[in-house]
Amino acid sequence: MPDHVHLLLGIKPNMALSNMIRDIKANSSKFINEKRLVAGKFEWQIGFGAFSYSHSQIPVIAKYIENQKMHHAKKTFKEEYLAFLKLYNVDYKDEFIFEEIDAAP
Image 1 (cartoon, rainbow, N blue to C red):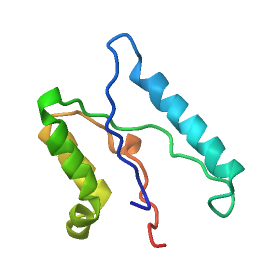
Image 2: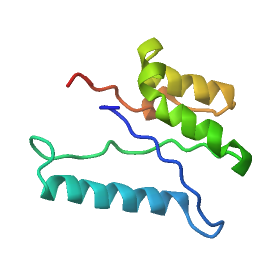
Image 3: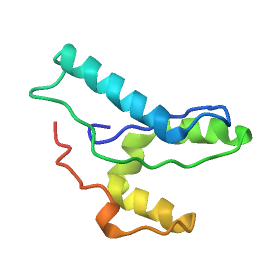
Image 4: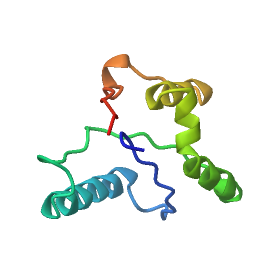
Protein backbone atom coordinates (compact mmCIF):
# COMPACT_ATOMS: atom_id res chain seq x y z
CA MET A 1 0.00 0.00 0.00
CA PRO A 2 1.28 3.50 -0.68
CA ASP A 3 0.67 4.78 2.86
CA HIS A 4 1.69 1.90 5.16
CA VAL A 5 3.50 -1.39 5.39
CA HIS A 6 2.73 -4.67 7.11
CA LEU A 7 5.49 -6.95 8.36
CA LEU A 8 5.04 -10.52 9.50
CA LEU A 9 7.97 -11.14 11.80
CA GLY A 10 9.08 -13.94 14.05
CA ILE A 11 11.25 -12.70 16.88
CA LYS A 12 12.99 -14.31 19.80
CA PRO A 13 11.62 -13.51 23.27
CA ASN A 14 14.80 -11.69 24.29
CA MET A 15 14.61 -9.25 21.36
CA ALA A 16 12.94 -5.90 21.99
CA LEU A 17 10.31 -5.21 19.34
CA SER A 18 10.90 -1.45 19.53
CA ASN A 19 14.60 -1.95 18.75
CA MET A 20 13.78 -4.15 15.77
CA ILE A 21 11.30 -1.62 14.37
CA ARG A 22 13.80 1.21 14.97
CA ASP A 23 16.43 -0.69 12.97
CA ILE A 24 13.99 -1.58 10.17
CA LYS A 25 12.89 2.04 9.86
CA ALA A 26 16.45 3.40 9.97
CA ASN A 27 17.84 0.95 7.43
CA SER A 28 14.90 1.18 5.05
CA SER A 29 14.90 5.00 5.17
CA LYS A 30 18.61 5.04 4.44
CA PHE A 31 18.15 2.60 1.52
CA ILE A 32 15.20 4.54 0.05
CA ASN A 33 17.04 7.86 0.31
CA GLU A 34 20.36 6.55 -1.02
CA LYS A 35 18.61 4.96 -4.02
CA ARG A 36 16.43 8.08 -4.45
CA LEU A 37 13.32 5.93 -4.71
CA VAL A 38 11.04 8.86 -3.81
CA ALA A 39 11.12 12.56 -4.54
CA GLY A 40 12.52 14.47 -1.58
CA LYS A 41 13.57 12.93 1.70
CA PHE A 42 11.75 9.80 2.88
CA GLU A 43 10.89 9.54 6.59
CA TRP A 44 8.69 7.17 8.54
CA GLN A 45 6.10 8.59 10.90
CA ILE A 46 6.89 8.30 14.59
CA GLY A 47 5.64 5.15 16.27
CA PHE A 48 4.24 1.84 15.08
CA GLY A 49 1.53 -0.67 15.84
CA ALA A 50 2.20 -4.31 16.61
CA PHE A 51 -0.10 -7.25 17.17
CA SER A 52 0.97 -10.73 18.15
CA TYR A 53 -0.48 -13.94 16.80
CA SER A 54 0.18 -17.61 17.39
CA HIS A 55 2.24 -19.65 14.94
CA SER A 56 -0.92 -21.42 13.78
CA GLN A 57 -2.30 -18.08 12.51
CA ILE A 58 0.59 -17.41 10.10
CA PRO A 59 -1.32 -18.49 6.96
CA VAL A 60 -4.33 -16.33 7.89
CA ILE A 61 -2.16 -13.29 8.61
CA ALA A 62 -0.12 -13.78 5.42
CA LYS A 63 -3.33 -13.88 3.38
CA TYR A 64 -4.59 -10.74 5.15
CA ILE A 65 -1.37 -8.94 4.23
CA GLU A 66 -1.56 -10.17 0.62
CA ASN A 67 -5.11 -8.78 0.30
CA GLN A 68 -4.45 -5.24 1.52
CA LYS A 69 -5.73 -3.61 -1.66
CA MET A 70 -9.08 -5.37 -1.22
CA HIS A 71 -9.30 -4.47 2.50
CA HIS A 72 -8.61 -0.81 1.86
CA ALA A 73 -11.12 -0.55 -0.95
CA LYS A 74 -13.70 -0.89 1.86
CA LYS A 75 -12.11 1.19 4.63
CA THR A 76 -9.04 3.31 5.13
CA PHE A 77 -5.99 2.02 6.91
CA LYS A 78 -6.73 4.32 9.84
CA GLU A 79 -10.32 3.03 10.11
CA GLU A 80 -9.06 -0.55 10.04
CA TYR A 81 -6.29 0.16 12.57
CA LEU A 82 -8.73 1.76 15.01
CA ALA A 83 -11.04 -1.24 14.59
CA PHE A 84 -8.13 -3.55 15.53
CA LEU A 85 -7.39 -1.47 18.63
CA LYS A 86 -11.02 -1.73 19.70
CA LEU A 87 -11.26 -5.45 18.85
CA TYR A 88 -8.20 -6.23 21.00
CA ASN A 89 -9.25 -3.83 23.79
CA VAL A 90 -6.16 -1.67 23.40
CA ASP A 91 -6.46 1.63 25.25
CA TYR A 92 -5.19 4.53 23.15
CA LYS A 93 -5.27 8.29 22.97
CA ASP A 94 -6.27 9.98 19.72
CA GLU A 95 -3.23 12.27 19.97
CA PHE A 96 -0.94 9.25 19.56
CA ILE A 97 -2.69 7.82 16.50
CA PHE A 98 -0.83 8.44 13.26
CA GLU A 99 -1.87 11.15 10.85
CA GLU A 100 -3.36 9.99 7.58
CA ILE A 101 -1.51 11.03 4.48
CA ASP A 102 -2.73 11.45 0.95
CA ALA A 103 -1.95 8.01 -0.45
CA ALA A 104 -2.74 8.96 -4.03
CA PRO A 105 0.10 7.98 -6.40
